[in-house]
Image 1: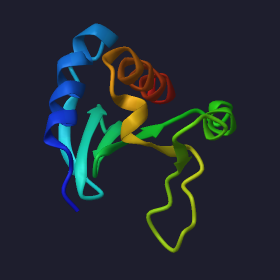
Image 2 (image 1 turned 60 degrees about the vertical axis):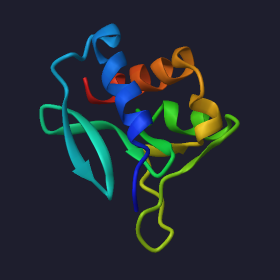
Image 3 (image 1 turned 45 degrees about the vertical axis):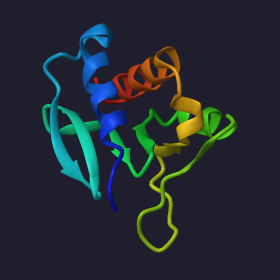
Image 4 (image 1 turned 120 degrees about the vertical axis):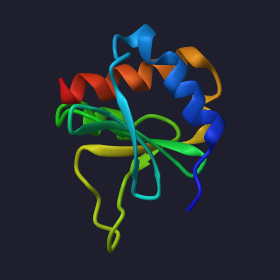
Length: 107
């Protein structure tokens, strides 16, 4: 599966503004992952974004429009990862919020 290189560039451009200029990139799940140390906090996947969340935030996020569980194998969701639809990432303020959520989960 290809990932949206434009979205990956937007994520990379926003990293300094969310205090993650030291994040590195790596191919993950067929997408482009952004990591702090060895922990991915977001992955640009297809045209959307996979985001790592805390256990407490996970159920709240699933109640949001355009957010679904991430289930890469056998439709079994990874309990702290969600997929955010492209429509919910169209503007940088919304994308920045999802980056901040992912960062909070790995810090």
